[in-house]
Amino acid sequence: MRLAATIALLAVLAAAATGPAAAGEAAPPQEPPPMDFPHLVLANAHVKLIVYLPDAEKGYYRGTRFDWSGLVARAEFAGHVVYGPFRTKVDPLGHDHVVGPAEEFDMDDPQGWAEARPGETFLKIGVGVLEKGTEERYAFSRPQKVVRPGTWKVTHGSDWVRFEQSLAGDRGWACAYAKRLSLAPDGPGFRLAHTLRNTGTKPIDTIMYNHNFTVIDGDPVGPQYRVAWPFDLAASRSRGRAEIRGRELAFPEVLAKESVWIGFEGKDRPAEENAVTVENRRTGAAVHVRGDQPVAVWRFYAEKTAACPEPFVRIQVAPGEEKAWKWDYTFTAGPKTAPGVSP
Image (cartoon, rainbow, N blue to C red):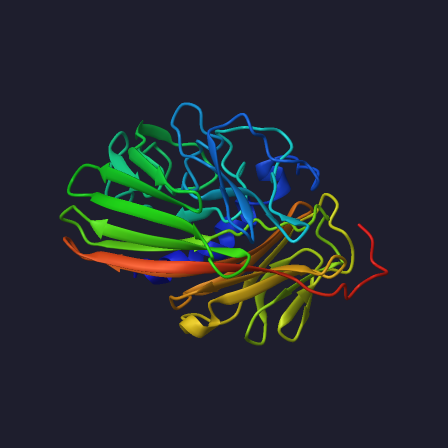
């Protein structure tokens, strides 16, 4: 019931609350990431990443929607730049004022929310222990009161960083969450490796996804972008100007103030279909993402500042057990296939 309800509500919630009217003005795609927030620089011979660090008082992102860890503000490789601010105004508490591969757990029904009464707490993994208000339905875009932000431990080397968060809620809800971001040793790219251990007495059944806010070489989303999946695409619901061409998604015009949202047909896809490529055909640079878990459902969102392929995966962890999963990101610098296209 929980999985079915989650998938049924994804289209309604995402279409209603993710667009420009709910989120605010989009940022210029060329805007560099602010550097006056806690961050790390990871680098090897192939790639350099700027990664924001979780910090309840000074962090770049302190909203109650997305996981605070593993936010890649900028990736540089072979003369190309990937990622950048999604919004013009820096608002650490804004629900979507994030960057890069931002992840969210339970966008419509966080752990313990349904059973909690107003004033009681629930878990938002990657954020903290939050207090339930008087609303009848949870909305990810609505700010929530943080009772305890969770204890973060950050360790790192020159080419990796590990984030660990311990959450102890009420009524048996508790977990230990870890994310390790490591640079690929043999080429430009990185891995996001997760573990979730259930330290409470209630079973954890969560739908998490990666929003993948992707902008390449500062170009606004438009005809120069191509997004491709390893399966034929069909939309169950959609909004905005985008064209499905077999296994690819294209944009006839640069997105100005409008947004695109697509819910694709097909549920419970195999792990082999947990893959997507976002390419800037004008510059030849591309981001390839591949996960190791089956996909409950695929969604796509875009504004001028980011093309966002969103794989949703189901993570179930019984008390005392642990679950691991990962996404691999590979950057490539190929030929320019659309020389006549300009931003």
